[in-house]
Length: 618
Image (cartoon, rainbow, N blue to C red; front, side):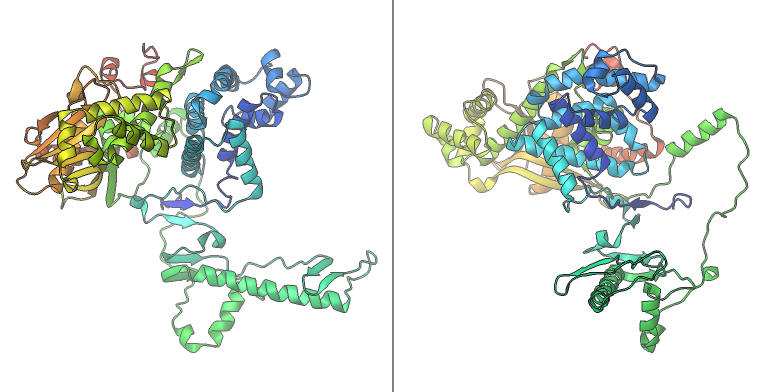
């Protein structure tokens, strides 16, 4: 399929918790919890975290006195290793103390995210045969770690033990989904057991004439018949069996045949429109091929519905198996050709694409920023100078505070907004408790004060007096851009507040818990225009529309609004559509141009440490 350029996905047979990348992340957490865990340390050295060869591991072990350990490697004189391996090892040994020191403060998800970004783990696994599945599994584990942190279930040691226990118990947890809606024609290769409950228009079942291994061994057991042993007398004697052994063997063979037939039934019934069966051999007795031939022989009507084709009847455009060796090219030419193959892979053009507002905003700001944040999954806030950058902690806390503030403003009882004082304060505190936070804690108390400040504004007073049916909070939308154009591009997002006032005017607001920037509302013009475009479709024709920002940290955060007519929504919609088309083309060319350092600073981008190594922000 690779040679013919057919898009496909190989669904691996291992469960999610048994995937190597999941075990690698669990090993890192185990070592962070216990520096003396020699097994976890060896696993990290051999994995993409450090990627040492077996020979290098042996040299390290000798340098440690024959017993490989983290403390031994840190204390011993480093043996001579290949330059790249030595560099990766030194990077990990330098990063480890920071990760261990911050393991309890940052939370498991942020800890793993930072380690992935600093070691380049994602880059190392992305080019592997199952790179896409590997990256999807990493994202899934990060999501699980985020839920674990939110529920307060335990530290990184407890989380690592849980992951390893699940890997040993082999739970039925599927691996992360990797096939996108835009790649609907991709061929999926998987086992019959993995296909249970699924259906495809076309299903192919190969190797129907494969022989089964029906060996039963000398010890036979059946719950109803008991235990039997086939005695072995000597090397020159034939295996013998008692009547009980023969009876149990016959019963086990019957069950095996029944299960064998059920498995074929599951495979064949996965097809909705067309079923392709292939495979034959001279010895077909006891195979699926023999079973099907026997069924078809007894049913002429069924036989007439089956079309039999020989290989010569198939019209295939395939590369000959025996090809002459390619001419020897200069290394530079071969490198250029390999680079071109990577940059221009064959892709299936999607018929439909859904983009969140934040994704498009990042792409319009800087295509490289979009690539780092939403495709490579890199951390925007690095580890630097032996300390976790203070902005990382600030970003994490700000995000949690933003979620909590939005929850309060969405869930607050509008009838209580009129009652300033203890009743309203107690109501807001109860909402904070419902999210699992203590209102007296510093971060939650700050959010409570921000929300209370907004509720004291004149705008909030109008909300309190309005008919609740005219106040729409946390309103999701899916907006088709430039209807009639191809491909179908949809903009996805959520409007914090859409309010239809008594004068017949609609106002949409977006709440911001981050500190006010010098640009003020202008810094969020893209988001406001996107939300205004969606709101324009939601309100009645002719209703005046305004869009604004609420900076909740301000002492009295009155909304800062502008008329939607000033935005130029038609031109903005066309711009969004063209930007989405450009975004679709970028991966095929693998081109993600960045900005000058001054521009990066102007948009407050946290990836400057990757684009500009001397950035003052690091």
